[in-house]
Image 1 (tube, rainbow, N blue to C red):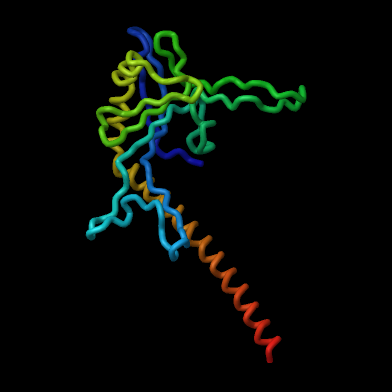
Image 2 (image 1 turned 90 degrees about the horizontal axis):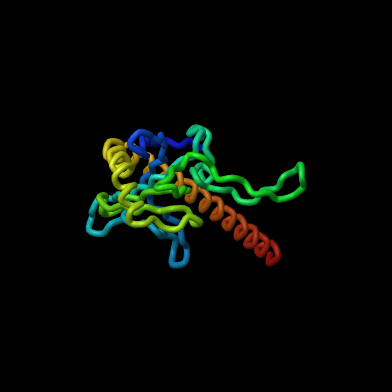
Length: 210
């Protein structure tokens, strides 16, 4: 998987030291699904089919994930293994035959001696007040840590989103198109199978009756 939007962020960790980080930025998109409960129709469409003739739109919600050191954006996993601070946990060691703990992925930063682990910043309805989230084992950010991140990291991410808004939207729309095309193809295959099953049953009924 290729990570298309990478934002470099230089963090002024101390008065004399900086930390170079990279963040993967994406725009959220709807995840519609086909339902046949009350006739075949789309569900979870959000603003794709607005009432009153309004034009379709997608949410102005953006996610920024801190990437691990040394990651190749052209050959990423597309999951948490791409993130700095993520630990895969226990893995099987073929040499010892035992499960061993693996260290967390490098690339994160520290605030006043605390390793922040996995970090993500999410911009929603109020881009001036984003959500700052840590990995499940790291706990939440304190008020002082939030202020530190808001001062040193958030402005650079916000500027990147503003500069690349059109490209981010095109990526999200492209993923939406790919997702819905796959869903439609699957539905066609299932409908073709149902049609073949019914044609076979009807043919056999005619043959047995004549």
